[in-house]
Image 1 (cartoon, rainbow, N blue to C red):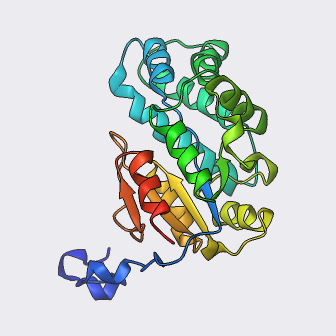
Image 2 (cartoon, helix red, strand yellow):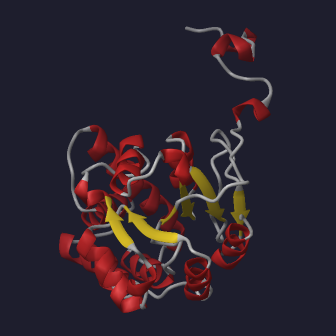
Length: 253
């Protein structure tokens, strides 16, 4: 057994100065492409959370466990060189959480609880104006999601967001979920730009971390309940909503 009690941080490869883990981002030049995560970043998941909570016996306390289980198994799928639609993984994770808490839930019930409301969730209130302002400022806007191509197209149609984006990218086309570095590398290649010319806007600490580790730039949307990962580099922008992030990006000349 290792004698952890007597060990010092440097012996285990840790930095005693947290600032050494941070990466300085270039905030003096504009990124060539702005990539946007979709769910929670652009779209308000309240209706879906209510639906999922309902089938879990109105156990709203289980919602975070369900989401982290879904994310965990998307990464398990990627590491195992497999691929399933993110919504399907979400419904499987929902069945797992339900079973662990004595709740009976069929596969069809799990799918409907997620996929039903997910197709028609609205954009957050400030999103359309922020996207409009960014386009007027000359930015190229690309959505970049773990959801399927048809899934995000349906979401954007119902939320009225189709016309705001120059292109829609889904990891379905590479078969590796974010935050795998290959997903970010693929997105940059697809848009014909270098990694450091990309900036990801996302409301998930794991997504921003993945982008920064892939040498992208980042803007974190600190929506309620969202936190940055303390062991990842710090993004150059962190604001509570897309309006404030747009203002910061537009200010870069």
